Image (cartoon, rainbow over all chains, first blue to last red):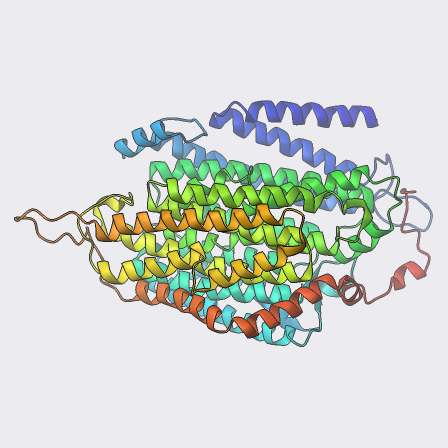
Length: 117
Length: 522
């Protein structure tokens, strides 16, 4: 279980970083989504992996699974979802107004964009 | 429990909601609400500052949950200073935005502005590391909206880059917090300080990784080389009032470094003592040099102001990286100064832009702008402050920083970087100022004096910028009392025990009842 989770997080992080380096809006956004999935799983695992245990304290069972990481992950999911929506819209707006989806701003492109304004 | 501590977070949140719901289409009403809220915030934070002067650390337990089980807001001298600085800056910025008409160039300026303030003030007040992340996101998502306020292809593209950079920073922040939680089982800063100090000396690899990850996150915020790439384009392309407000956003990174690396990973905590300062110091020196060279090399006023902001972060972080009370006092003084001066510089740049054809801010000779003399005087004053020349507070701040590094190994490198950096900045500012304000193109005979399209001859922008300049002058004149207060502040920062005692005042009463709190953990 630990190996499966750890390798899944690692693979998603690697894929996310690879996509980020593509420097075009769509792959970069996909890469960021990959990274947020990876970090959500990572946060989830930070409370230790416990299977079939309640996330609350009960008198009958002496063990439980840590509920706090689940709350943290929930917050992180909501935030990353909102952020991804924002960046998709901004990326679309930038593409439609500048006719280029490169993420980096270099001088030549800046000048073209300014001339087209 | 002092309920005023949460007011700086609640007030802008409520006002922003009211603006969106009730005053969506009435700009005049939005302005009234926004100014009233900002003035209210200034009043509240001044009150909190006066209260913090007593030296007592105020703790606000949300939902009355005792720390470390609930989230706490903590008011000490450092956070009180920061929220007062932010609210004062916000008043000047909102007045400028109204006076220059920036708030009418798109929708929801004032609502986003209030949300931004809520995030910044919350980040300064919170005593919980995950809550710090949440407030970072609040201020970031508001800043994304503000950054692209008014639209335009170049601004949108700079905005996309800014958002992507900060999304990466947020992801890194979550990785760091996950690691910290996995090692210590808590995210409350005071509790973390206790647990990190108790870690066994042979099991520190994870917490060291987490400490460095967290430092990277804050370095992105503070625009430390080599993580500064988002800043010049963002600050130069953002609407000027927003760039002026962003002057305090880089300071949040510096604040978070001071807070986390004195309280949790303090200089006397063995596990991380040897990694933070030695890494931060060279990066800060390079940041200072790159910023100042950028000032000299800038071809546009917006870039000039942005690189001046980078350079001032370098000076600030040199003082932060020492982690001694004297250096922290110098860092705090320089932080107040560079926030005011950086913001004023962006507003001056915007006044030039507003009076030129098609908002051009190139450092080149153009037809003379309206009110050339007054704007040139403002530029002169802020340039003196940013470059750290006497008689303004930048000079005193640099002197304090240089005095504080006297005992450091790299003292000659630091002194050389600060002094040569100042010289380069002076040359850069002098060149820009003389090109823009003195070497104006003479008009052809038939041309009417060019006042720029739609120049508002309003007094409000001058009042707003003037109030920031007056703030710099006041910081210089009252340098004695201010440094005395800041020296108390840094004494309080380095007195970790009193912070921990104030937050954890219910001394683990619940653990005493022997509930199986450790559960599945060993």
